[in-house]
Each structure stands twice: as C-alpha cells, then as structure tokens.
Image 1 (cartoon, rainbow, N blue to C red):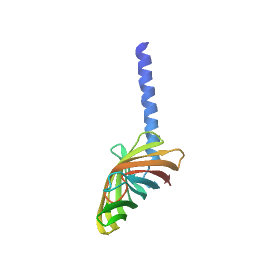
Image 2: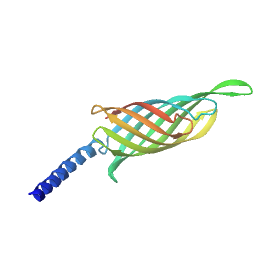
Image 3: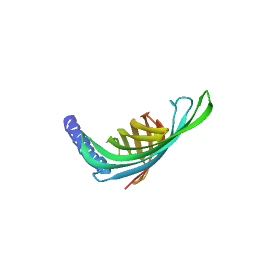
Image 4: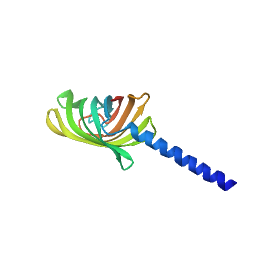
Length: 168
C-alpha cells in the first residue's frame, strides 16, 4: 500500500510540475515585449555618487532556450555626478544609447531573473564606449505591470537600479 501511495504521489507531483512549467514558459512567449523605466545610483563614481536612470525595451526572440528565454532590445541611459579637481567642483553628465541582450529564467509565474549585457555609445565630455553587464529581476504583480531591479557593472550609467516595467 505504501508503494502505491508513493507512486501516486510521484505521478501527481510530475503532472503538477509539468502543467506549472508550461504556464511559466507561456509568460515569456516569443514576441512578448517588456519596456521599463528605472532610476538609480552609481556608488563607484569618482568623487561622489552618480545619479541617473535607464529606459529599456526588450523583445522575446526565443522563448525556450535552455529552460529560459532570450531577449534583444535597447536602452537609453543618463548619469550625472559631481566631482572636484583643482579648479573646483563640477557636474558631469553622460547620456548613453546601447543595444542589449538578456537571458532570463522564470522562477514562478510572477518572478523572473535575468542576466544581460549592453554595449553602445555614451555622450558627455566627448563620445565614449558604453558597456554594461548586469543581473536583474521582474516581479509581476499583475499580468502586465512589474517592479524591476538591476545591479551590475556599467560605464556611464547607474549600477544599482529599481523601477517599473510593462509587458505587452
């Protein structure tokens, strides 16, 4: 009797897991778009803390790649910071534009984690190469609205960000 109960329990868990996995995968189906706005800071800026934000858009290109999804998109960023030199205190600003790519895993129907990279151009005191590696998350509290957070290493944009995302 114990063996029968154990077999039925394993079968039940397998069926529930399979149906739950399909529901999670459907959340980030091919063609889904996510756009968001984040604000943040860069605690590693020379001479102070940088402040700024990023607006991004991601398109799900592949929805079943190694148990996750692959997105491509772009981002616009801004960072400003104060620094001091022999001439006094100054304010420096950079605007960045970059394509980006992320690989994400759906932990639950509401919670997704991702890692990504962005490389492009930054404009401020001249034109610079912009580069960022990051990890982040989306937590959807409705079908289309999520809070988002991102932490990473970035040149010319904030490294710690939080904001809101919209899925459509």
